[in-house]
Length: 189
Image (tube, rainbow, N blue to C red):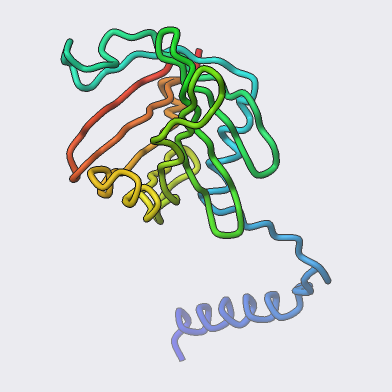
């Protein structure tokens, strides 16, 4: 055997002996917590409970659109272990609330619309479950069957909420038929 091979054999054998003699016992209990993207997203929103943010409609850039130029305000107002309520105010109109509900089934996003007296609007409780592939800072919600029955034209809707922590922004984005329909951006400052 050549000197080089002998040295390599000796090094490999030494590494093997060290590896076998080291303490490889694992702790009796490993408390590993696995958090889903839905849970992480819910937690990231929940951490801002009590905060109010102001924003602008950035799409469509059309003066004829009902939200064009409106003063937008969202308040992460009510947070429990399983539900976050976010009133979304447009100018003086306080009829809209976004609701995120976390359950064993996943994360559900709904729009609650109310009249001034607090009674439900005829068109309310539409939204859907979080789609796979979300992230702790971004979640998309395709329209559910309840939404399709209530608003057939919205059956292809996908709502996306995104926390852009680099730019301190929150974005609410709506697509229909895979085309942009509405986008609002709020400053997290």
